[in-house]
Image (cartoon, rainbow, N blue to C red; front, side, top):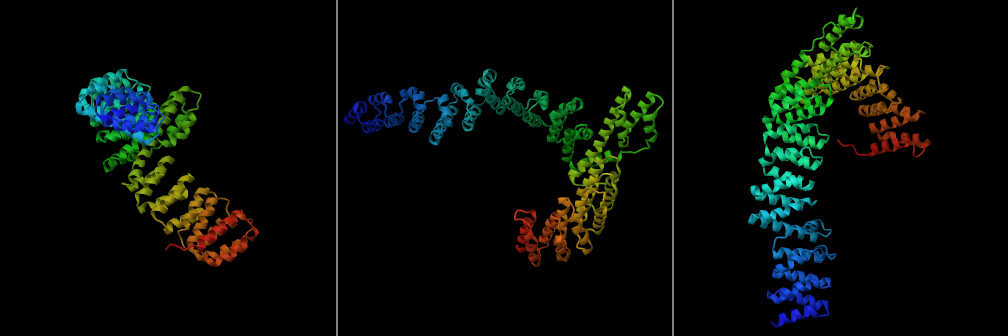
Length: 609
């Protein structure tokens, strides 16, 4: 009793902070009313160390009368870290439920011990709410959903989910009346709770301008799985936000086969490319074979993003789509169209010309494109309209063939190699390009002769490059491929890209007869050709050294740089004195000097065998 009386007196009147502090700790071990009352009054002490001791003492004895004061900002937001921490610690020890924005804010405190204590307090109180199924207390927690602290949000959400159906009416009410952050969080929670009664309200939120609310409402509708939400979710395929589109696709895909009728109808009647693309993405996720015709139909879309989506969708079906894709290519007929071309341009009447133009569109023959483009600029309105329509038909048919070949390219198969080879004669450069890609990935060497023929005489230089590269991939170092590359190298009319590829292919051969033309390539202005020639000479080996060393006398800096690189690729230490002598006349920052330093380094570096 004497100790308690002394402690009370000291805490109330001692001028020394350390005595008051010690007395506070003493009273924290005394459950008597006098001790409790004295500690509560001591919350006004001006010394931080004493105040911390008082707060801790109140927590130790579990004094609920102190809660209202400790919840004040002067304690929770005190500039002293230890007082903020002690306040949270004591509130947790007292154990009375107290959810406040100030406590929630401390989960973002600059000091980790305060953040951790705030989260611990809220986590413990959340656990108490769940154990006691206290809906009224949980209602107070809803305002804390505005927090930006993800860990706290998770604690709150887990609490609401744990309460289950008991909290649904309260959440439904706040879904209509709460602010944006609360609405977004509640939409997410109701989705997790699979609250079927909230479907209409969640659908209404899809028109909200807040992206977070939209995303959570979409996800919630997908989780709830009420079929009435499918049309509204599909409408979000056209949302201006890509994130919202993707969220809607994922939500619709959750309905699986139940969404198919809505998706099939949407893709048939929608004219917007984004909606068509996203509808195909959703069908891809659902992966039902009944959707294959829709993918095939859209291989010929005028929109690139739609064609790409259709190709991706078909690839997932693998071997199942091969017969249908082959039919697209087999159905291509190239009739004699000279008479139609003549009638389209020189027909006696406009009606005759229009009929001929429409017939060209129906045939979908790419050979008519140049004429149709010209006629699309005609002064005759009917001719213009018919030509533009036919151009679209021709383009779609061409893209459908391209798409069909692209599916085989992605599957890395050439199921009917003769049919694919035939496409190398197609009038469309795009079709020929896709055919080359299919043959390259099909790994069938039977395609090499035709690819080499394309590399030799196709009208498009880029396709000649692609064909030569494909032939080299199928049959590396094959004599037929190398001989074709030599012919291309000798052709002055070919592009730099094609010539550089020919040089690279020639480098696979070890024949000395190729050394002279490769050395000659080191003089070309094209860096790509010079680089490939230097690599090719290095691949052939030391037999290339004499002509290369001879070229060190060249006065052309570009050639000399390439020659030195080639010597470095050969890797003979005997060439180092010649390189060093050659570069004496060049400045230290010269590209020739740089090439020489690299070459000498390469020569001296141990080779990996």
